[in-house]
Length: 162
Image 1 (cartoon, rainbow, N blue to C red):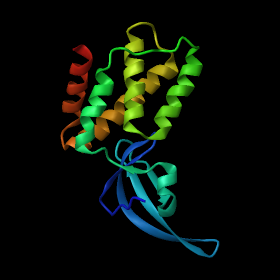
Image 2 (cartoon, helix red, strand yellow; image 1 turned 30 degrees about the horizontal axis):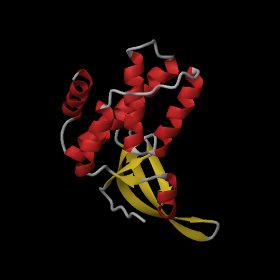
Image 3 (cartoon, one colour; image 1 turned 90 degrees about the horizontal axis):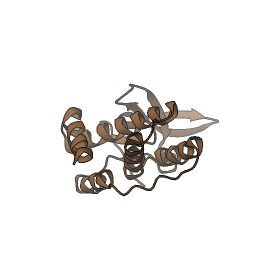
C-alpha cells in the first residue's frame, strides 16, 4: 500500500495530477477514518480519499522518470489498430482505459484518437476525450520531468510528426 505525505503529488484516475493538501480525520458512524485531501492541479477541484481505500480507487504516485520512455514509445507507435466499431462503443472502451488511471492506458487512448482524427472526423465525445487524455498526459509528464507543460507538449507534437 502506498502512503502519501502532505505536499506529495499523486494521480487520481480520470482527474489527473493532484497535490496532497493534508490528511484529515473524520468521525463517521462512531469510527475515526483518515482521508487524503487532494487538490487536482488542473481544475483546483478538491477530493477526499479514504487512506485505506486509496489503492482501491486507483490513487497512485506520479509516473517514475525511468517509465517516461515507455510512455513515449506508446505515443510513437504508428501501427494502431482502430476497431471498426461504432463510435459510442469505441468511446466506452477508451473511457474504461482512462478510468484505470494508468498513464500507459491514457497514452494509448490519446495516440489512437490522435491517429483516428487524421483519418476521419471525430465525434464530439471523442474530441473531448482526446483533449482530456492530452491534458492528463501533459500534466503528469511535466510534473514527473520537472519541466513546463509547453515543453512536454512540444515533445509530444514532435513524436507525432516524426
